[in-house]
Image 1: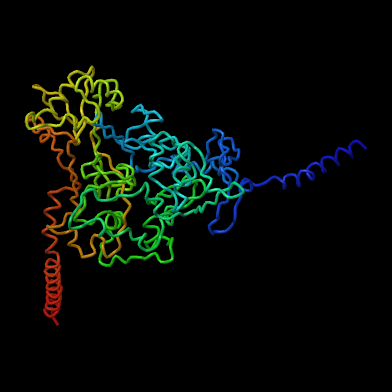
Image 2: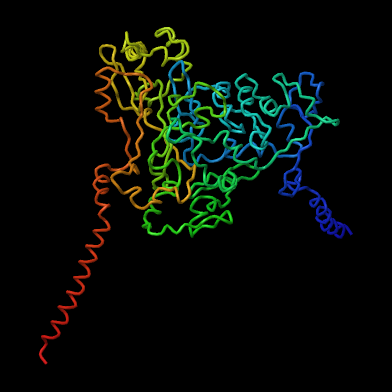
Length: 575
């Protein structure tokens, strides 16, 4: 009897577990979904950081919290990660953040990712409050974002009524936790809710979209020429061909809820393990790929030798400025705070960023790159430690005590007609009073103290340029390099591919010693290819058609000459 009951229980227990297991919800069933691609009008309550509903006029010191407001329906923790939130693998270098400090004359590329030639946050000793003030305006936040702010969902998903400049001002005024609500007009600077935006149920209606259009992305990913060319004003420039065709950024740079946004590079490995090769230029447009869009053109590249596709990226011909403007200076959203109205943004506004610089990428193909040059103060390398950047906040006291710099080093130490060597002498004096071997970085060179309060140029690792690949704006076939034939590149008048950038010192160094030492290091220009060999090839290429004609004629003569000799030798055979 006991053995029977034991056997019965062994059979019964698994059977009783089956309905219990079936009742356990799937991981995604906790979150609400419409299952429709149509826009869902959010009719929601505003909550504080504890998840409690806030009613207008009854805040009692409680501040609205975006994460708690979205959390009842969305997996906020998952959405705040991904590449867009600073998570995921580092991949190939992207645009660095530029630390700008006028008091010390510092213009330094920095990032929390481990990219070559990019200084880390820890090396510069930056606090979170510094990061928020410096970069918060153009950082959407996230679990591992550089500013450390919480994710701002609305800056990307609220298409029309989001005021980007108000957000930037709120962050500058030390109100980052309220920036989203202030930007959409839901709250004032003190956290008091705007009752006009609430209905009788104390709810707000928000028209949020998964794709809020290119304008949402361009807040932080825009570029524009820095120099105002009277012959080519900005309003005459063509848009990216994809945007002109009605596409949106996220048609190619896609992501799921995890926000691991596809970067679109050849051979990209997505953190989620998803195959994303079709979302690259080659994957969508070349024959071996799979088109992402129904109308994606498949170029024939008629007459183009195949090795061009092996040695060049698609963007080498189809992206960036026209070849005659390659190597031009630009502004970018993050480096030059675009989207924020100001009167003092000029072509000389730091930092200097160049576009269309042709360099090899991670796959060994020639690709256009952005390029910038660091500037600031460093400690020279010793036997025990490499070169290191001096944080700007460590220099302010000594700069004010020794050189009387209060707010802007470059302006306050500028040369004058009465004192044409003031800048160089001041920097030399400052370097001479430092406890360790210190150098000043500017114009792609390190500068150290020389005799007579002058400076001498030295090569330094930290003075080297920083580059990252360029993807946009993309030009159509009719505007691509090579559209007018081989002579677009292979002629004596073509700029491409000898693209150059000229790192300029952001302070005036006029002494003979400074000029001679800089010339000796030959760092005034950076060229891409072997100039001598390329310049010899250019004039020869123009005679290519004539060479083909001559060689074809020679081959024709040789062929018929051989036939003639063959028939003649056959006639001489004895019968």
